[in-house]
Image (tube, rainbow, N blue to C red; front, side, top):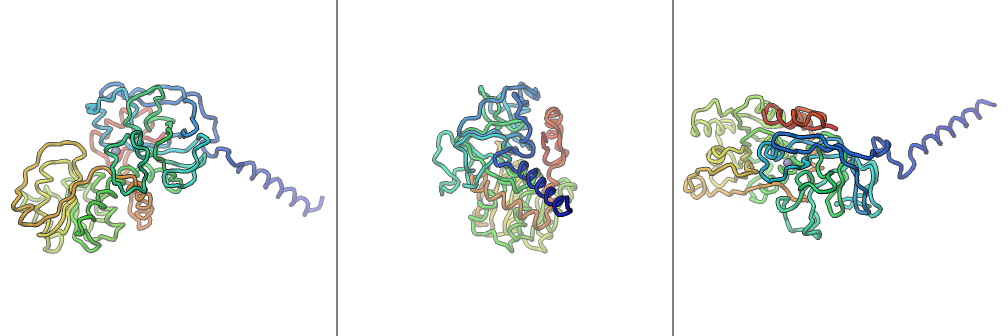
Length: 400
Ligand SMILES: [Zn+2]
């Protein structure tokens, strides 16, 4: 055999091996493994108690998608469920900030909710399920937010059980929204849901006509929501941002995320002194616009004092009812001619916009990944929730 022939044989073998690896329709990556008969689901079976249960993996219908879960963030909503079960869902499969890989799908599934093709091996996230209103799509002008729709991870338990992302597998049923996010890494995909909340809030803020690229913006509250708010503003080109919080660690992170200055409210006695400190941070000007990202009623009362006459305010800190706040309508709203918008959750369109936000944020070097401060395996989901309640970290994630 001549050398040339040897090379030919090598080339052919290589090609055959390559084509075997790339067989169309053949699952790749994790999906290459056999799909097991059962899945592990972390069920919240009592207050502050998850149990890992095994359930059979149900048949995948023609419009369904079976996803092998890779990870899921723990949300404030999960913390409320864990502590108090306000939605009366126990026993429940929680986890709505999840993502994973398609391992099997019905023959009718061709594309995601944005019209992008879907195949086995793609990485996906879900958004809302319009069970009662299947005609709503992301391109509707009707800006229905997720508040009125069902979401995986907050569904009542049923005979399928694979309804939340704190599990090995989740069955995405026909009629659900699903997005192909294969071009985002795992951490970005886990952060999509909380980031969508801020993409929505900034859209609401823009509707006032006051928020511009050169606005002076104060962001009060530097938990995950406030930090992501700063990142969204930065990706819009807004640079003159002052962060306000009582924790120096969080303020330092706010600076990393793009805030120009920070003010620790613990350093200032009383709202007048605090408002003065914010004004000083802007070089002697009050803010044009404020984002209120704390869940404290006092935070709402205070935030008006940071804003100039004719300025704007977006209140987004109250995902749940945390009580009443006192304001002075004359000073805070009327004589100031303040424009106030509220923001809650997001729309489908904001969800899709968020994928681009995450790419842009990384593109300009914002340390978005650092928002995930703790990772736990599924078996340690109780510990993960306890850690979350201690509020030591920012975003806690379950990595399967
Ligand atoms: Zn959430």
